[in-house]
Image (cartoon, rainbow, N blue to C red; front, side, top):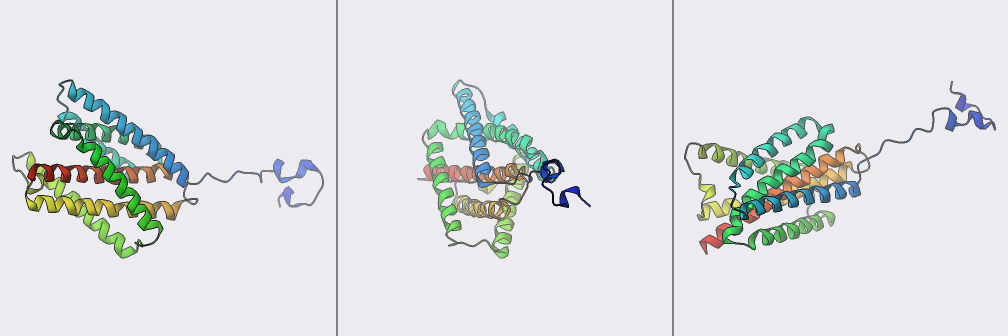
Length: 245
């Protein structure tokens, strides 16, 4: 029986001195996710700006694009298997994504200097639109909707992976061109990326104030993956439309 169970006025036997004063474990909060997300986005923006500067100075930044993409995939796999390492891996992921986005968008800036900024603007607007639709329950995330979004996203990534592999053998996939089929594919991918934000919001709502504090980094990673994907799809779509018209 615990000594703290006895009723006494002696302060030496209060719960403070007998181990019942343990602080509750810190939980995941929306404010914590917001801070971590903003810091990660700042890291991505800083690295992207650095790669842009290197490109302007005449450096070939294609390796930043390829290296950043491969590194981000590797880090993402590590985060998936080691959630408790997310506080270390997510900042690394932000750096790799900054390299990828810097190299990817640097070439777009050559012909369309304002387009990356326009794509960022569209991405931000889309984020808030989906957030409002989620908060007002205009769109409710059900198991069926979750399954459809995950299946669609997995299918799109599979197409990208196959196209990427075919590129090593000199086979150019339809998704890299400016045909109407390629444009429709981009539109569908952008829509699926937008709806993927709903899964991120749902994860945060279901786990806030319940999950361990380190899960904030996991939620941050999920948001970064979706936002970067959405930005890339929007930028690719805008570029294709600009070239075609």
